[in-house]
Amino acid sequence: MTELERNNMTTQQQFDQERAEAFAERLVDVLNSASIALMTSISHRTGLFDAMTGLPPSTSEQIADAADLDERYVREWLGAMVVSRIVEHDPQDATYQLPQEHATFLTRAASPDNIAVTAQFIPLLASVEDGVVESFRNGGGVPYSAFPRFHEVMAEDSGQTIVGTLTDHILPLVPGLIEHLEEGIDVLDVGCGSGRALNLLARKFPNSRFTGYDFSEEGIAHARAEAEEHGTANIRFEVKDVAVLDEEERYDLITTFDAVHDQAKPAAVLEGIADALKDDGVYLMQDIAGSSHVHKNLDHPIGPLLYTISTMHCMTVSLAQGGEGFGTMWGEEKAKEMLAEAGFTKVEVKQLPHDIFNNYFIITKG
Image 1: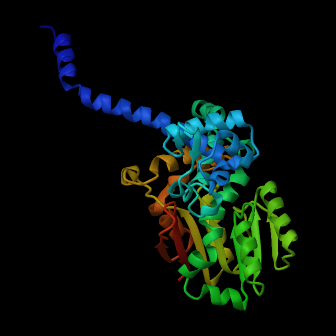
Image 2: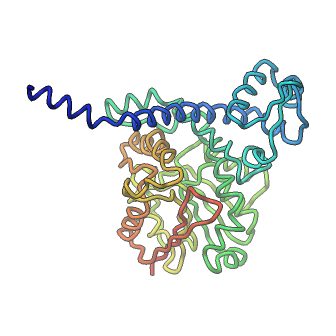
Image 3: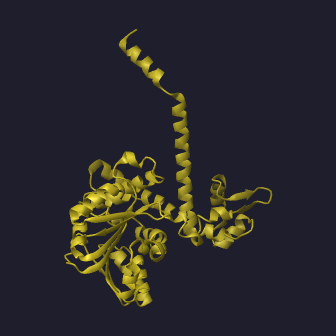
């Protein structure tokens, strides 16, 4: 027997057919799950889940009428929902019903537990696949401007995880913070996006003064429009490169909500925040919960989703600006290291039961 024949025999002996078949089944599940995610996003955007909530068993025509949509599309969508075990179907009556237990996680009324909101990220990320593939080959990245509906989807998602729980869950993580806000302090939100969180705080605490910075003109336009709509006088928004804050000990509270890791120059951002924060101030940083080491994220409940978001958005938008490309999963260890380098000496990390996405860093200078 030749050496090649012996090697081939060894390879055949080592091949685990059962393992291969199990992996193939898993890949089929991946295809089905990806399809369900896409259809769930469409369900949310068209309002189909909301329309079906509370309806008795109904035909496709009745559901289409309730949602004010085309029946043929609704009928095909219902097929996907039935075989996905999301919608129940009675073939004898040709009726469909969304179980209440499922609606609890799929409707706007279910917020902050509406997973359909987050499903919108799947088609949003897929829309820039060509640009990301090009970046794999030639380096660089895909800019924010290439993402359709990004601010819309991000605002809706943060409306669940951040805005909806801000005053009842997030602010109480910092002892005495609500009382200080009621008395009146200066607050800065770095990377404020569409400004929903900061606008809410400004309305809630009229004695405090609020400033929001973001480099996105679109995001700042949305933020200003909301402030004007509510007649909020104690807030201002400015288009600004947050890597160059150039402010000294001005703010009692500085916040960042899911904003640091996708910056082009995150170290400069953190250093600017440290300079702009008063000596007795607090920096509240919400960022993705995870480790800087991939092997420690093996059991993360949404690890694949977060690494995908990193590749398809957070990392690539940073690289598109000539940035460092930390990505979504820069991790708690790296965050603590960089906070220390920026001049912060006390960092406490907290989590909230409703939020599997994020860590909340309570940070001071001493």
